[in-house]
Each structure stands twice: as C-alpha cells, then as structure tokens.
Length: 208
Image (cartoon, rainbow, N blue to C red):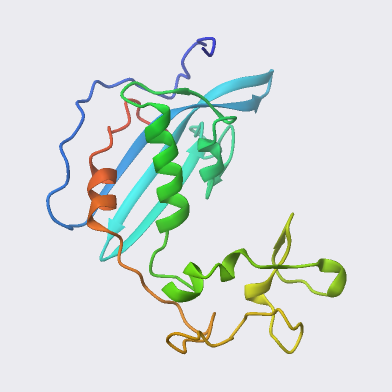
C-alpha cells in the first residue's frame, strides 16, 4: 500500500457514481483517474494522480494522459502518450472504484485502439505480425528510421534498402501497400461501451 501524502492543493475531491454503460455509438468525452504514479518532485520522489482523457468523436478514438498536472500548465510527470504509466511497476495504487484488471484493460485498449483511423497497415498485415518485425541496426548502420530495443522497425524500411523491409510492400491478401495511406478500423462497440462506463475522475485536474 502506498503511503498517503497530503493532497495537492490544485485538486478538489468530488463524489461521483459509476456511470451506466453507453447506449449507441454517439460521441463522448470523459476524464478518468485510474490511480497514482510515482514521480520526481522538487523534494525528491513523490506520488501524483494519473488522469486519462478518453475522447470518441466521429468514429475516432483518442486517449491521452497526464501524471500530476500542475496549475502552471506543467506536470509532475509525463503527459500525452503515456500508456506505460498504467504498467504494474508504475501505477502504485488504484483509485477508488478501480482495480488492477481494469487498469490492465485500459492500457491494452489504449495501445490497440488509440487513433483507430490512422492505421498504416491493413488488418491482414497487422495480424501477420508485420509491425513486430525488426531489422538488426548493424545491417543498416546509417538508417534513421524508428527503432526500439529490438532493432529497426521493418515497416519503415523499403525493400530496396533491405530484403526484410516492409514499407510499401503489398499485402498478399488484399494488395494494400503498407504505409501508403492512413486506414480506419472501426472500434468495436463493446470497447466503446466499456470506456464510456468507466468511473469519472474523482478529482478535478488543473488540466488534462
């Protein structure tokens, strides 16, 4: 259990009931508070509330987060695309009405459905694991394409640059060339209903 600290002066606790499930696919926007995360403050390590803004508008789903938003427009921690803040090692304590299963599902939903109308690959390419393919950086030492600890992302390398490159490679099922357009994939109704039914934040953030 995380040791309780004095509340930040910029937050005001509100009592809210858990909303019912969404009916239909109408637009919605809400702010949720899954729990608290560990951050670095002026005096050293501390804890700050994590807020996530969920927005569904005209078929597009977006999720953004902020760790301890401050009244000056800054934040004690990360903001924007910070789904990793929901990882077990980062989220130190769940907020009321939340549990670890909900937090895990929110993280998975965020990583899978954020900006569902900006898919670089078709459903076949993603199902085949194209976005998980990596190339050894030593084989392309001068490349500046995106990379992670696994290597260069093959989806951003042309075949003419490397035999394993996937950028603009046609899908064997539908012929779509990876990365040649932004594709839209509809968010499942069950995902939207679950998001809309999440408990509203029990604190008012300075911004989110």
